[in-house]
Picture 1 (spheres, chains in turn green, orange):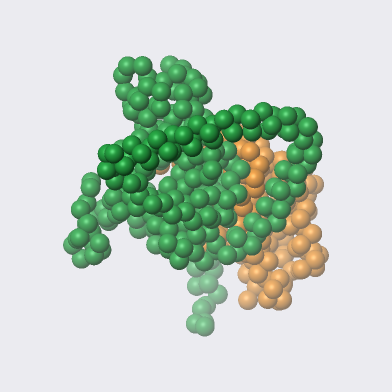
Picture 2 (cartoon, chains in turn green, purple):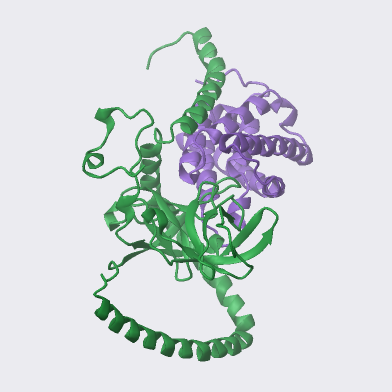
Length: 297
Length: 176
């Protein structure tokens, strides 16, 4: 270690704090101006910490399970009555679905329609969420090792959760549909009106650019429209919960603050998402894939 | 090499390596705790600012063991973990140190209520500051209610955090 005179050492101690404050400020500005500068660092940190978070989140899931059990014990009788009624209804729907599936198969045969892309799902556990009022993201314990990639849809059995924005080897970050930066092309199932589902960090994202005409009514189902080619059409997103002067708000089907496990769905569409390019796109910084893939921006 | 800058009131020397790491370790733990996915409805948006509590505690009681570089590193780690705009937490923690360090002699060995009200003041300023920063970074007016509730939760949880940190501090470093 280099020996410093006491005066020198005091001077260094006095200046570290202001210097670091300025440095942090500079990082905030730089991180905002060029979002990609810190991406690899972010992914590296997520990858490194994912196992720790994974271990730390295990007991939490146990706590969640206990809470669920307690809730169930209290509400068992009512729940049972409700489930029996629901089961009746679902059995009818099952018959309908089977009939429709048979019809559909026949009709597809007649049309020689191309079958839908085979889906593959990866199940992942939520290991971290973004603590704080300003971001809506989660970290899941699946990455390129599990063959998930950027842009893929993240869902639960109930509906859409968000999409993958950063993918590391063991962990990936999901931008929830409620985040301020989330924009998803959707349609109103009843009226086929197109709109964009825009998050604003509240529990209920807004519908923007609702096309004219019938528009949306409270209780309408909202599904992805497939425009832009990132999500396939028809993924359930939520229902229109309220309509006011500013527009419609959508209640997501998924309880986003209580996510335990999620599905990462591969529809073979994520290649259509433009790969991020540095703001100053110098030819030597472009990756190889950009050359043989059309850039859709 | 004990630091002389913070010698009012004198800080007992801690030679044990593990004990010297304690403030940084608790800061990192606070950062991890704040991103744990507790499955409580609405919790994620209202998570208390745990690192602020730890930074306040250590800046008052052991500023020598939580140097600015450590605050900077923990702040950046928290930003990277949570996916929030990078640098904001680092800035918050460093400014906290800047604000608290000058007044720490008024807080050491005082009634807890006094320390707590200092923290409440700090949290109020921090919460509003964070809100303004995020509004500017996103160029939109964000909902202020979450900020208020989050600040209140942070202040409400502080006594527990302070008690735990104090206990750990005494257990690892001895009285001081």
